[in-house]
Amino acid sequence: MKKTYFSLLLIMLCWSADALGKPLILPADKVMRISASCVEFEHHGILPLKEGVEAFHHWEGEFYPMPLEGVKVGFQEVVPTLEQGEVSRFDVYDPLYIRTMRVALSKAEFEGIEHQELIFSPTSKLFVEETGTGRGFIIEEGREGVVSAREGKLFFEDGQGNLWEFERRLYLWADPGGKIQINSFRRGSSTRFYPQYRGRIELTVVGPNQFLAINEVDLEEYLYQVVPSEMPITWPKEALKAQAVASRTYAVAQAIYSREGHLGFHVSDSTNSQVYNNQAEAAAATEAIKATAGEILVSETGTIASTYFYSTSPGGPLTSRAEWEQMESLALEGNSPWFRWKCTFSKKELEASLKNHLPGSLGKIRDLKIGSRDQEGRVASLEIEGSTGRTSIQGELQIRSALRPSGLKRTGDVLSSFPLLPSAFFTLECQRDEDGSLESVIIFGGGSGHGLGMSQWGAKGLAEAGSDYLSILKRYYPKSHLIEHSERLRY
Image (cartoon, rainbow, N blue to C red; front, side):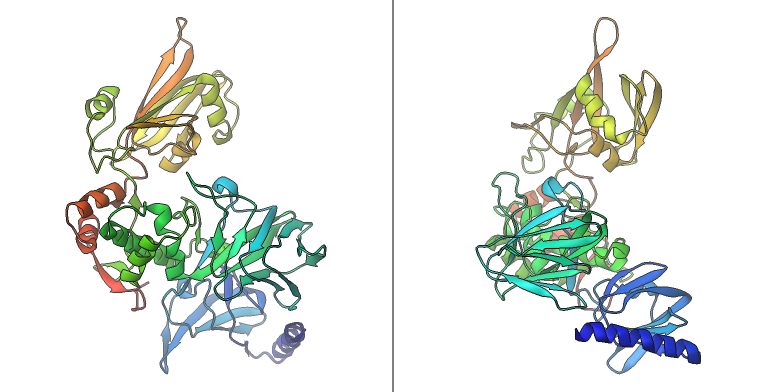
C-alpha cells in the first residue's frame, strides 16, 4: 500500500509542479523499457520523452553529458526530471557497465516469446509479488503455480487452490540458493529437462491473452547457462574459455545497443540472440567462465567488439553439387558432423515449409532457384515460382527458417528433423517427372550457423593443437583486445 500512496502523491506533485511551471525531479527509479518517445520506470510508470531530452552520468562526485542511448534498460538509479508531464532530463547514477542481463524466455521449442500460460515449480520457496501493491503469495517446494493472461490481466493459481488476479507486473524469485523451475516445457536436444533459472522472472502483459516472461540474472550467472548451450562441455577448456569471452562480449553488446529496449529485455534465449538454458549448468563451463571473469573484447577504438560465432565452416564454395561431392569425404574443422549435410523436400513438404513465409498463395510450386549470394557465398535470395505467381525470400535467416527439413543427413549420421536449415551455404537441385513437373528438391549444404566470427569447431581444433584461448580469440577477432567489462566503454 505504501507504493500506491507514493504513486498518488507523485501525481499530486506533478499537478502542482505543472501549475507553477516548474520542473519536477522524481526519485531515482529503475528503467524497465525505453524507446525514442517514452520510458517506463518500475514505480513511476510510463512517461513521455520531451524532444531534445538530455542525459547526464554522475560518478565519483562528477557528472558529464551522455547520449540518450546510454540510458539502458535495467539501470536502477536513474533520476528523471519532468517538465509539463514529459521527461526533459535523465540523471544516471549507475556505473556504466552491464551487471545484469534481461532475457526474454521463449515458449516450447523456442517458438516465440509471447506466452499464454506457464507452470512454475520452485526448487525451494517461490515468492510472487505484484509491483506497486505488494500483493502476492508463496509457492512451497513440491507445489506448482500456473499463470495465464486473460483480458489484459494475469491470473495465478498459487498451488493451494486459490486464484489470484493481478493488473500489474509480477516478480517471481526463489529463496537464496534456490532456482525457479518451469514445468510447461522441456529443453535440451538429447537429454530433455525442465529448465531452472537463477535471478528473478518478471511477467508483463503484452496483449489481451499474452504475456512476456523476462529473466533478470547476473551477467556471469547468465553465462553459466549459455556456454554449455553453445559449446559441448567435453571440448577442451581453452575452447570453452574462448566461448565464454565471445558470449560475454556478445551479451554486453546487446545490452549496450538495446535493440529490444522498447520491449524491456536485452536478449532472447534462442538463436535469435545466443542460446540460453538449452543445456543444464556444467562444472567445466562454469570453470571456464570463472577463469575469464569479466573479460570482453573491444575494438581498436574502444567500442564493444562484434563477437559473432557459429558452429562450423563449410570449408569452401558450395555453388554446385560437384563442389559439394568433391569435399564431402574430407574431415575438416575437427571432424564436425556439420561439415557436409543434405536434405530432400518432396513437393508437398516444400509447399508446407514455405507456406508461412510467402506473402500470399502461389498455387502449386513449380520451381525453386537461388537468386543471389552474398560476398561470403551464402544464399541471400531464394526465388519461388508457383502456378499463380512468383516471389522471393530475402535474407539468410529468413531463407533458413523457410526451409525446415523433416530429415537431414550429416557427415556420419542422420537427424530425423531440424528446426531450420543449418546454414545458408548450400546449392540445390530440382527433381522432375517425365512431364517436367516438380517432384522434389535436394539441398546440398555445408557448415552450421551464419559463418561470421569464431568457428566453434575451429576453436576446438586449435585448442586440441595446443592453442590457448587468447590465441584462439586473436585468430578469429584479430582487430580486438581484452578488457574487463567494468572498464569504461565508448558508446
